[in-house]
Image 1 (cartoon, helix red, strand yellow):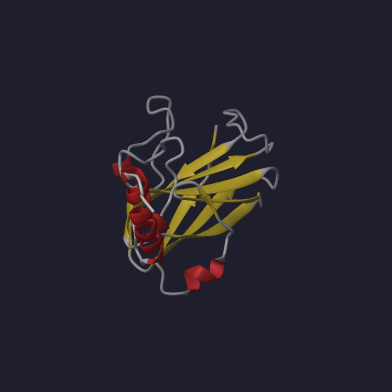
Image 2 (cartoon, rainbow, N blue to C red; image 1 turned 120 degrees about the vertical axis):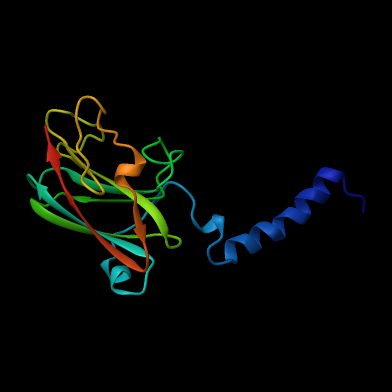
Length: 166
């Protein structure tokens, strides 16, 4: 049987791709856009993970979404560059999320309260917050730099975020 060069390359690449999926800490394990469930038991283990405590949620309407990003300029708040997302029905007051991460390192978190649950940001009603609670104003259009929101994860790290509304 004769194989074309492109088929030979494909045949050789397939086992390598499967091996990458099996290796701990490989890039294949930390893809973008993974919606996960809120499993607080993960934050009771050795990690690495981030326990995100959100306070100041104004009501129990709509949903609250937490997204974690690698703390790089290329990823932070860029469309589709979040690693993991957890979305839950809103609870007035406080909520906690457990966000696993692929390895210890530097990350940043963004949280949004979509009050009417329409999937769009409504500036007059929806709330937002970010790791390290940076100021959000008209001049930075709600996009503080990654250096203001980044934090280091070693094992299980707890961060506290305060929701803000206009």
